[in-house]
Image (cartoon, rainbow, N blue to C red):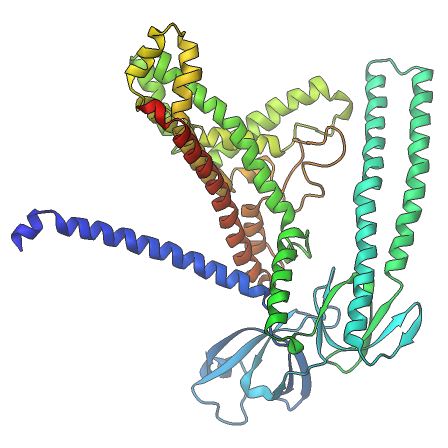
Length: 550
């Protein structure tokens, strides 16, 4: 036993066990997040309960079971609940999503198993997903088409067809509003700023006024035609309606322009549920959020996260490489260089919120405010670059991750043999040519390693972004079809902040909980995808320049 301990084998086994436990813990956490998030899109059965409360009042409840738990009977009795029969030590209660927000105070309701008289899964009950006011549960019984009530035998397929028609028309209206109408509004705002600029320069002549008025009149004419078309599409989308009998037994009329889809969950087979799951995941990735981010998708947050990280990578890489090359190749060894290296290492340990405060004070207020005064005086006092935006977020995270790139690049430069440099210089190359053609290509895998670490850290940062650019809901993306097409001054959405907002600032906690898991899994997937891309590039560079190392 003593020889075994002296050989060091126990420490090897302990290290291997610790690594294995860590990997299992991380994979287990990811699997838990994936399960809790992705299972949200699986169509759950829709139940109808017949209930009798402690006062003997009968009621009907329609909804989906979201959660269940065992509650001590004594706790319920202490809360004032009375039981006609002894339920035992524990009572099961169910958290039911009831929807129908116009007629029910809350989307979710707890019911006790002792209050349930019967539970069934009717085949005719449906869930209608709406663009506002949440889901609606009930029995579709008729369709109103252009003011006429149609009683149909196969209402399921007829309703789906009418909803697809209304959704297609609504999408055209939204596309028109965001596209052509938005472009005209953007041009009108530019004309206003242009006129204001002429006024500040005292150069607003009558001819310029007339030219601006002519352009504005032309845009107004186009706007009125587009507006007329837009309202015509809205009216056409709202032409039809569905009559649905809810859990109160009353008939409710819902306009189809607010309905996004209908699901008869209790009629779906396995393949139907799988198809519905894929459609739900696809909609979550590609759609815009709605209902205070508790419903809909997260596409703007995905786009903002990836765009900001790529912009940060473009900024941090050249500065980090230049700093590392100077410190390793040009700077003389001495106390100043040593202090700079210590400062770089210490910068990696500064809390991220400190970088956010620095970015807000220096980039947004000082640099952005100066840019507004020099180049956008006509827009003042409304700031252009003097307010939080995606460019300032990228610069702030670039400074935050700069030490990682510098240290990684320096390590890569130090691994290159000095004989390679001497051989290049002996063949007549200058030091700059040696760096550009020999040293940097050989160090490129290390540079990519630093970039991978920088991306991994920057993609998950939230605290500094809350100060320098990220918002709960961004009306437009940083990229559109309006000149100059890339708008770096705009605010943006971020998956990390979206998780914080939905999880801790949502007015509907129960509805938001599954989306927190789904968005968390999506953020991890985005970070993994970015890292895998960078790793593939690094491996390609490593193979490409492997011959130079020999």
